[in-house]
Length: 67
Image (cartoon, rainbow, N blue to C red):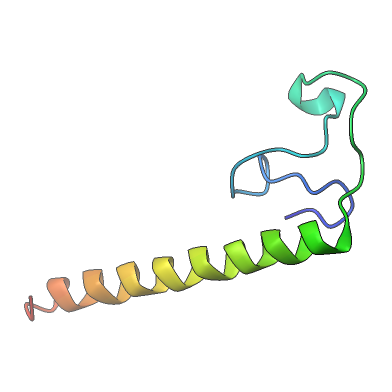
């Protein structure tokens, strides 16, 4: 996630918060997130990473024939 704009669209985790022209969004809107919002987004990102790790480990196990 881009720390300054909070944008996740081009950083890979859904829901753009930057409202910049580079995504074709409206020009005006919120440009900054509160500390609580940043924490919430980061905690969600940690959950996504944990789920991705579990899926990768599961896939490796399947590939090794240990379903």
